[in-house]
Image 1 (cartoon, rainbow, N blue to C red):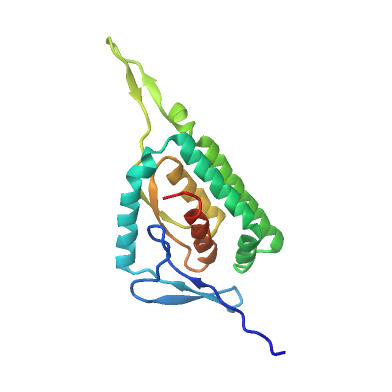
Image 2 (cartoon, rainbow, N blue to C red; image 1 turned 135 degrees about the vertical axis):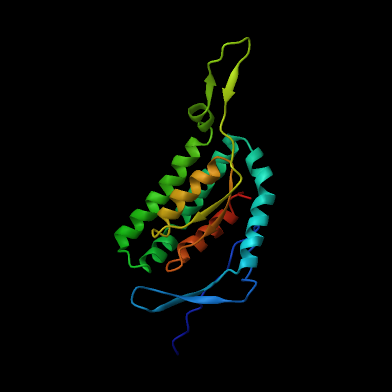
Length: 201
């Protein structure tokens, strides 16, 4: 029986709950540290970036209007789904040059980070808000509000680093446009699949 060819996954963009190819049709090869081919990743164009911003703006009113408790539930669901795909994320991190133990530890830390931020969802107002002292027959309160659409650029750590900058942005009611790590985009793209199936708009 002849050796079978590996079926390579086609990595696409994630915009407005869908996985389109780049409008330009461009892609680039993703390789491991030894230069071996892993996959082709879509290379977003300026139009793709504009589409992502439009989608994030459209999702913002609904996401920011959700209760903090509900946002916490959704972030916890992301942690559950990441945990369920632990082996896949570990494998993708190993392709970036991490050892098996280091890759598994990074996935565990990413899951823990989602859980940590899920726990903060309904506590942000109490910690960041305040009752301001005023001299008058009225009360003055400060409460944090979402900023809107936040641009997130993935740091060199393709999973934990991305989670560390993404989770705080969305837990507080913001929507995001994320630029994945160019040399190691696979964990970020797989994370997009997790986000797409976790009730996150």
